[in-house]
Length: 354
Image (cartoon, rainbow, N blue to C red; front, top):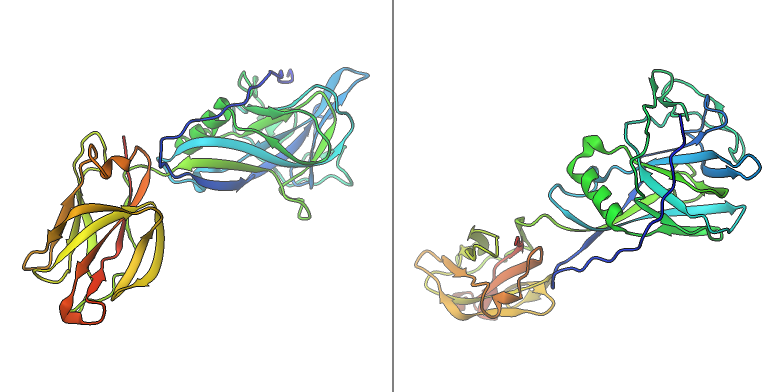
């Protein structure tokens, strides 16, 4: 079976819509292993190190390694990946020539195994059942079916001194992470190789951090949930927010609803991007950051209900952009309760769709 071929790679930056709020997650490798091309019956899936080695005299690669990150267990379904980079801790470099370390997508499932070679693990140990090797995706039952990688590079990095190496986000890295999120059954991980000789900490190292995939993503649009706690008003219970219509900006039909308010009172709705829970009047201020008022004030019904439709085409609701997340709240009059003479609802957090 032939070894995978290396390709060049390019850096990539992705523009985000205004007010879009990224979430960042660092995903530790769920599988990693070195494979030994000159000794295909050996393995090191449980070892503390990962190697990529090139034999200059023989002009062949002798060691490469595999990584897999369980993206779907760490990022909610429906999220939109905006960047994806790999972080590796390098402990040994034998050259600083021009050949990069590159990552390519693996085409088939493989099992890490538990074999653990001695010392710095430049030599593997005899493969046991379930080990991945240069000849087997899972020894001894499942040989690799060529090709074991897809054409093209996911990401890569120039050879550099020992330390934290970052394989930057690229269009292919974003596409790979998105595919692993959307189709976890087809997540077979990455194959990393270089025409130099380097050693990295594995996920089993213990003393040093193992490989990580750092992903920035936009949360799934359309998610709406309540936050903060509504303080009871003069009716004996707190006023809470809900919603009706659609979170699609194109449909322009999102309405914030209120229940449990003071009958025949009046209040105004407002929104912002951040969360807090700070005493405010007789209640809590649950929204932070720059705040936008939805005026005019809204009268409550005899049952203490109210609603505020949003028009995304006009100020201030035109601040809301696709994939952005906002928090809504209502401040209302409560004279019968005394004190500050006003109270507030809980908060409603919504992420909007195009």
